[in-house]
Image 1 (tube, rainbow, N blue to C red):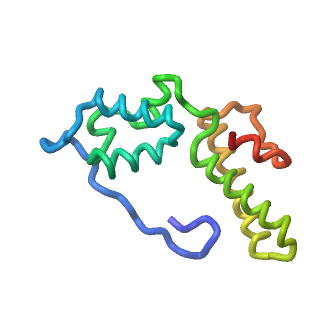
Image 2 (image 1 turned 90 degrees about the horizontal axis):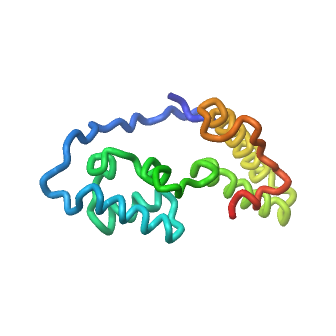
Length: 150
């Protein structure tokens, strides 16, 4: 599949799914869930939690150990964020680009980045509304973007 805003082709990144828990796994499912909740309380996002578990604890796959994804575990324990993480990351990028454009008004590359990021946000919001992950009435307020990052 092609990239969204360039003429480059994508690279297939498929891997063989993990079917069973390896014998060398250092933790059991409940211990992993406790670690996830601990780091979530510390303010980490689900992707940061996954990286910490992989690098510090040697947990290769949370799904193989717990049979649930990190976001599912957070949802079950009432620690889910209002907006999905990828949407928040795009909003954060847009805030940074707009802050740069206020100082550098003639930067046309930044203007294009602003347009592309806004387009990605709109497409993602449309998808999340269809999927029911955000409510159908929800609209992104482009004048008050920093409000979403708190």
